[in-house]
Amino acid sequence: MSVLAALGRVILGLFAAIGRVSIFGAQTLSHMLRPPFYPREFALALLNIGWLSLPVVGLTAIFTGGALALQIYAGGARFNAEAVVPQIVAIGMVRELGPVLVGLMIAARVTSSIAAEIATMKVTEQIDALVTLSTHPMKYLTAPRVLAATLVVPLLVAVGDVIGIFGGYAVATGTLGFNAAAYIQNTVDFLQLRDITSSLAKGAVFGCIAALMGCYFGMNTGRGAQGVGRATKGSVEAAAVLILAANFVLTGVFFSL
Amino acid sequence: MITLDDVHKSFGSNDVLRGVNLHVAKGTSMVIIGGSGTGKSVAIKSILGLVTPDSGTITVDGTDVTKADRDAFLARFGMLFQGGALFDSLPVWQNVSFRLLRGSLAKPKEEARAIAVEKLRRVGLTADVADRLPAELSGGMQKRVGLARAIAADPEIIFFDEPTTGLDPIMAGVINDLIREIVTEMGATTMTITHDMSSVRTIADHVAMLHAGKIRWTGPVAEMDSAGDPYVDQFIHGRAEGPIEAVR
Image 1 (tube, chains in turn orange, green):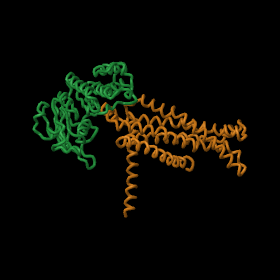
Image 2: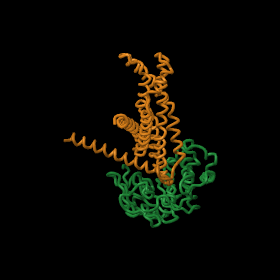
Image 3: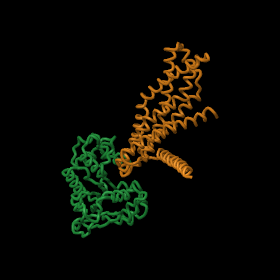
Image 4: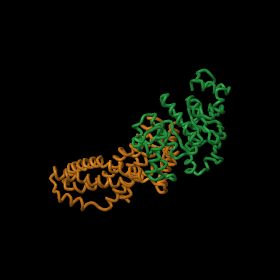
């Protein structure tokens, strides 16, 4: 009986958490749509989430694209299908690896940063100070970050897709003996508009999840340094799991239905 | 001007406020004293709406704070937080003029900066501090910047939460004198939370002692020493022996 009770508590807790996050998300959306707006905070968020994430996104994508080319070539060689490297690298990067890896990198870099920053503001009473200065914390902190991430992560995914494909191209033409012009032609011919739109749509959803989790855990932090640490860790875990779950759902929506 | 009527607030099983009744008259300086964890900060945060009381009413000029227009209501207040609560990412002048750069009180940037520099000068800081980040300032300077921010929009009501905590006695004296001067010249209504008896004697017109979630004693600061209340007497003399348990 105690096992059932414990299981019940876990399930109730899970649904309660989903409810709280949903309400937080709805409130964030509401604050995005109603003035006052904070363009400076939005611009800073665009810079931090977008521009400053480019190096980590680029490095992740280029190594992944290169490794993907090597794996496909080695795997394809077992049944004389080495020639499919350009097509599989392109589809693999654009449909799955590009958005997912960029999403996870954003969760590691941006979600943690947002959660730690907002949680520190909370425990040092900066959030209370915002309220006393007639500024709604969700409008000033949450809405600009979530909006910026939702808009800029698709661009990062697009950049990651291109760099990942280039990584595969560099390895294939540099070490596997592929013809450069034929590689590019095969890549372009094989990709469909649906592949690209799904990639960008995933980027938008993953960006929204990453920023929302950072803000949610930051705003609901416990006390002291331990609270900030827990909020940061929890935000990255939640963002990573939700990104992977959302990826599964979106893949189903775009490619199975 | 500010009235708390039978205000209760609990956090889980911890009953912090157990029926607080307090009146602060317009233009006076009320100092709330009491041991750590007795609910002084919760009482002040309840007035500002940062904490929602479980029951009871809080009115400012007769208007229930829960029914007042939020922006207009908060525009009447300034607050100095215990740790300063300065925004790390903004330079000092933008911290001071935060309210003047946004919302209903927004002014042009140059004007807001000029007001910030003037308020910094009022709390004894020079203009070169204006462009520094809060992390580059000492604790005493951060308190003064917090004080400048609290008075930047010339509020009618100012709250000071432990204004001298963590400061050396000389800097504490400077802050106390500044608060007294500013309150007198602005004619503001103020509430201060402190454990520092020198602050109480410098800042207060009236004193209220909060103990066990209720106002134990309140009266003019001149009558505090002869209050005849053993709790007040123990607290203001800092004695370990008495009705207030030293181990809480």
